[in-house]
Length: 262
Image (cartoon, rainbow, N blue to C red):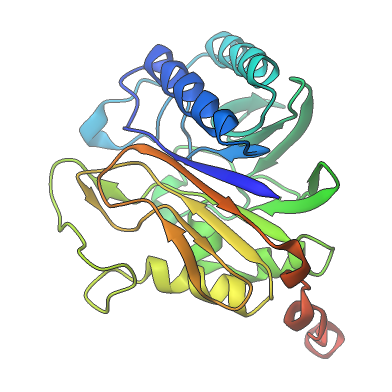
């Protein structure tokens, strides 16, 4: 399967985010990717204080999702679209899965919120698997993939060969600009990506914004724990990788003796 990971600039508005969505989805489709994933809370944008993101209304989000479905159908590419979302009187951090014909397959809500997010969203209450073109995959959102390896394993033991990891880590105002991928001088995030792949024998596909001072790069990690490709730090664009799914056996995940730890 050929996948794409989008690294947009932080959206100035919902309209700006949708422009980035169409631009990068179309570029991914030209490169024959079957699915493209965007960063965490891409619509309307992660609520960092430095960006002054306004809380979107339910109608604004529903309209944006409808536009995203049209984009997927127009360019015939599946889209993983992280958004804020209203459901059952809760405000959630989710990632919608849209098929290449624009149909909704559902969403994964963030179940493990970072402590700083407790006053922003309500946590989701269930984990889900998705399937595009016969390939099963899971989704973990930011904090979930970095600090809760159980959630990646949950997907791997149920047949996921890829886990997508939309996240938001960095700043346009302050910080350091990494020079070398996976360097000991970098924050631990890229090292966590390696572990999520190698401890489960699956692909781990992680996507971030193109911050001026990013904490991590948009990256594709192989089942053997090798960084196959990454987007250069601070550069918006699309990262495409052709995955050999025969390597994503889930071997180590399936050897886990879960009954011993219940």
